[in-house]
Structures are given as structure tokens and as C-alpha cells.
Length: 233
Image 1 (cartoon, rainbow, N blue to C red):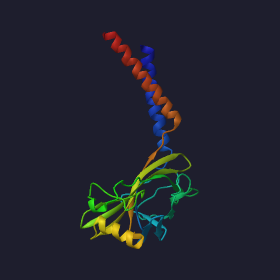
Image 2 (tube, rainbow, N blue to C red):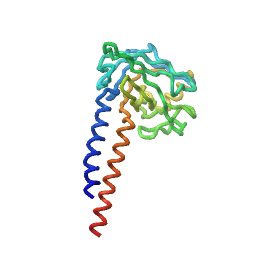
Image 3 (spheres, rainbow, N blue to C red):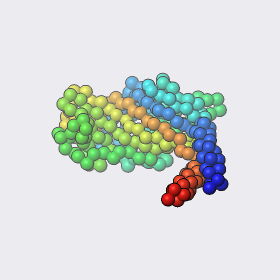
Image 4 (spheres, one colour):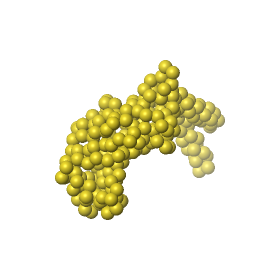
């Protein structure tokens, strides 16, 4: 019993230290808000085109990494997406944090959407959206006064010290138009154009060694609890 207790008391702090050290080494973490550099995004059935191919960090932005920090006002590039969407290897956004001798933070998409199974935008509400065509990753939500087109995304970003994952969304506003009107505009013109903004949350991926140590610590906790339960039975 004493050996197990000592094992737990030794391993858990060590595991926590390893996990904290992994994050402290600089894997990209924080919140990235982006605006459109006073540009627009055009969406049709097969592509998403950004004009210009520029994004600007908005507020709040709190990204830290070994390559430097991204702060409000910093600009990066954003690449057009042409269907089928190039997931898992093609850069989506790139920022240069500007640290001397540092590198670029490159955001790689691993998933987009899904959109809505509902393609009848006349029934869309702020809480129950629609997609203008089947299979579209965009969701329209809103009411008679305004509509928002939203694209959910996820992916990875890395620097010299580690890998992080990100989740978030981009959105485009359509003031004075209902979801049905936006859908009708898309059906008539074959595309829709708007300004855009977005927000991503970056989380560092724990090192395998730290996870293994934490697993051992939890195993030890389980053994201690089991012994105490038997002793009280």
C-alpha cells in the first residue's frame, strides 16, 4: 500500500510537469480572431474565393508560439478553396509571427462542415439552419431581418516545438435578407458575396510521454482506491 501511494505521489506531479513543459515549450495556443482586410468572400457551388487573399487578426487574438506571437492587427494570407476541398495537406491560412529566425504558422484544414440536411431555407430559423444545396458545408441561419452563413472548420498548426489542433468557424453576414432570400440569390446568380470574419481556438497536443505518465498515475490512483475499498469491506 505504501509503495503504491509513493508511486502515485511521485508519478502524478511528474506527469503534470511534463504536460506543462510541453505547452510551455511553445506549441501554438490561444484564440485567433480574423477579419477580411476590408475584402470579401465569394462562394459558389464548387469554390470559396477570398478577395484579397488577406486576413487580419482581430480582437480577441492571443496566439503564442515559439515562432512569436500573433496580436490584433497582424496580417496573414488565406487561400481560396476549390472543391472537392483539399483537406489534410494544403495550407489554408499562413501567419508570420515575426520572431527572429522563426518560421511561419501554417494552418492545415482537416475537416469542414458538415452543412445542414435541411435544404428548404424558407423554414430556417436562428436555431435551425439550412444549406442552399445538398452537400454544401455552409449553414444559413437567421430571420427576415438578417442571415448569417457559417462554415465550421478544424485542422492542425505547428511550430518548431509541437503540434496544435484548431476548431472554429467563419461567418458571412447578409443584412436585410432572410435565409430564403439568400438561397434564392444563390440559385439565381450561382454565387453569393459578402464580407467575412472568423474565430479559431488553438489547443496544444500533449506529448506522448506526458500522456503515458499521466496514465500510469491514474492507474496508481485506481489501485489505491481499490485497496482502500477492500480494507473497509
